[in-house]
Amino acid sequence: MSSPPPAGNIFEENPYENHLSLSPVEAEVLWEYAKLAQNVKLVTMKTRKLMDEPDQMLVSRLRSLETKMGLVMVLFKASVWNVINEQPVDAMHAAETSGDTTIRR
Image (tube, rainbow, N blue to C red; front, side, top):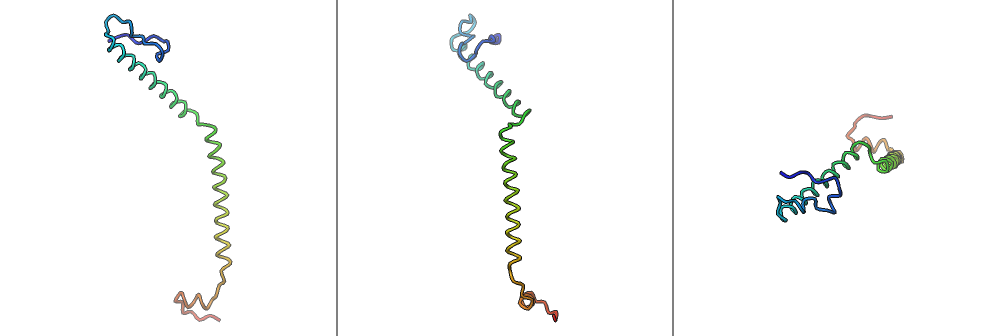
């Protein structure tokens, strides 16, 4: 096994290029693995950051959406209630269609 690459920028310079025990192809393969490992580390760091602290912009947008959805729900319920209350109640018609045989005065 070879030693890990130095702390420099792995994406710009191949640290395995002049290694005496490696062929040029092996050095290129090791460099690609080192770049891949660095990318995985970066993704892991960003994922942990997102998990630790929520995105404040997203949270504020979701709160705004929640408020709007609450308002829409209230307006919808009020509209349904208004439609129900505007329907005329005909006692005789309601009794005939419901099968109710109670005599009403």
